[in-house]
Image (cartoon, rainbow, N blue to C red; front, side, top):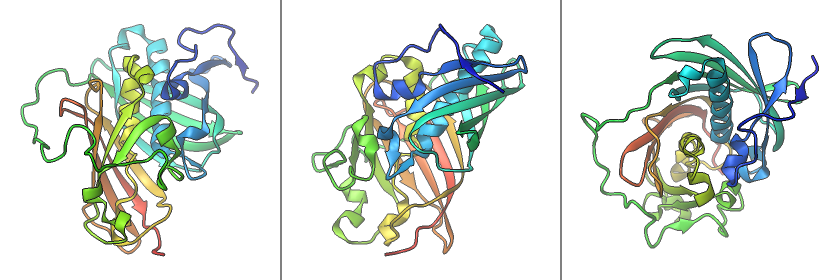
Length: 295
């Protein structure tokens, strides 16, 4: 099947921020088969080591799925990708990618869509999305996390220009800091499998409410694998990841709290909780991953 770029599509103009560029998709022309097809580019900023960051691919797929859902029925514009279940089939190179979106269900409160990120004709990430309406009222119950400052602590380790920044290139596209008090591995010590970070999109990426929303989904996969505090370093391949979007984030810093229920001999689980500058829960994720082998 031959795909062609459309000459003029609303919403495909390049956005100013680096993450906005990831979410800026161009619709592709194809046969009328009920499948939405989009082209995009994931710059090498959004890599960890040589591999494209998983959370970025999920968030970009969410942008494609949202575009196609809204195109299918403009009455659904108020819905957002509140849940995403992702399987990683391959590790794409930075650069051009394509997205295929299929709508599985249209409902008054819940819609379902599947999105597949492909590169060079090969499926790389498959995500099942659940769309619904975001929370817009005060929660009935929400534990406070007052022990973590809303902004980076004075001794927080900035990624840019640090050894971590040489691996996590995302620090070139956003402000990113690691809480030293929860990261004994930085000093060659061991501790609990938990980490805390602060992350903030550039101002140009905070202007667009959709880009800000997708950024929060991406941030839910930003913590290093928590087994680093147990002496396990290296790539931790994700077996499966589920991401939840609860509400649109307020401008400013996001707090990322990563914890684990168990680090086994072969696998570990990792939960990431994302709070915005007001302390509200904006996103969450849970993933099962293969444990890196110790040095």
